[in-house]
Length: 145
Image 1: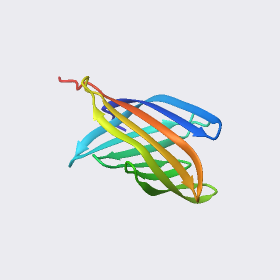
Image 2: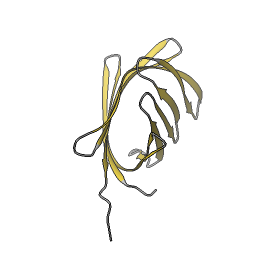
Image 3: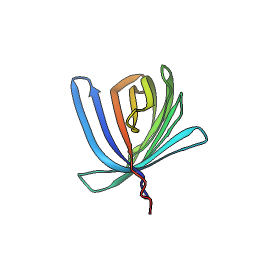
Image 4: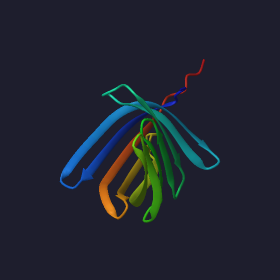
């Protein structure tokens, strides 16, 4: 994958009394087209070396994300709305509901972009967790020859 940016990703997951934090950096492809921003990157699973391809489509009022790997996740986030999504695992398909309580995407004064997302994930009527995601997108300097 050709890359033109780096990302710093941090995810906090709260499930009952359990709290976990995942943080990593990755190379990414980031661009704007027709009023939408697109972010593509790959996550490396440190346990087994498998890759998950991630795609974020971001516009002013909505974020659509898809993770495609051993587990496929499709989610659409709209601030203060409940939306449908799904998880597809080797064990089957699971419909989900998302209640997005935080969504912002802004260009910072230093030229980086910041995505902040907070949502509750439901399977059926049961809340399975609260997720807080932050991605800092650092565009690489273009090399002029």
